[in-house]
Amino acid sequence: MRECKQVIHGDYVATPIKNAFNHKTAYWLSKKNCILAVYMFTVENCSSDDVETMLSENGIQAFVNLLETKLNHNQEVNSETEEQKTPVLDATTSQNQSLEVGDFVQYMNCGRLMLVDINTDVCPVCEEKTLAWADPNNPEISLSGEELAAAGYELLDRPSYENTR
Ligand SMILES: [Zn+2]
Picture 1 (cartoon, rainbow, N blue to C red):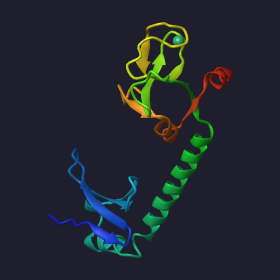
Picture 2 (picture 1 turned 45 degrees about the horizontal axis):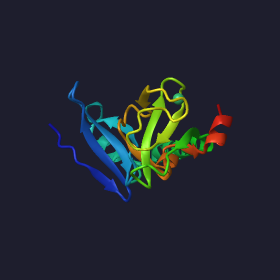
Picture 3 (picture 1 turned 180 degrees about the vertical axis):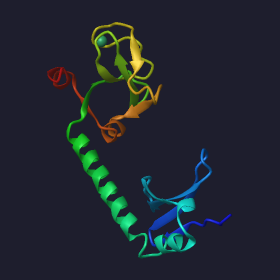
């Protein structure tokens, strides 16, 4: 069996990853500080010479271009979503036990997304006690306005929020 090594060219790294199902090894190209990777080739489908060529500094260039295209596209998608943020009603009060964070919740009765005082069960608007965590992947999360903004939400006061409904 051939030994597969990780190959680094500057900020780019080609990493061999063994497929758990077919036991073949594929190379993936990624970049320093980026979570995105592009598929390069499967080792078992190539001759040793081909593998060497594709892992050379010139050889990875085509995959570098593909990776950069994908990275740029992701950035565009991110800036698009930033332009249309999801409104969240800032219903935190001076009673909140934290000055910075609140609970990010959605009230099932009215559907309002809100940042409320920590441990608030009852909807501050319609006083119904039916709430769900706004982000099911991050239940029981307490967030600040800045953290919400970074996640694509916009914290609004009551009149501004009601205007968006
Ligand atoms: Zn409500």
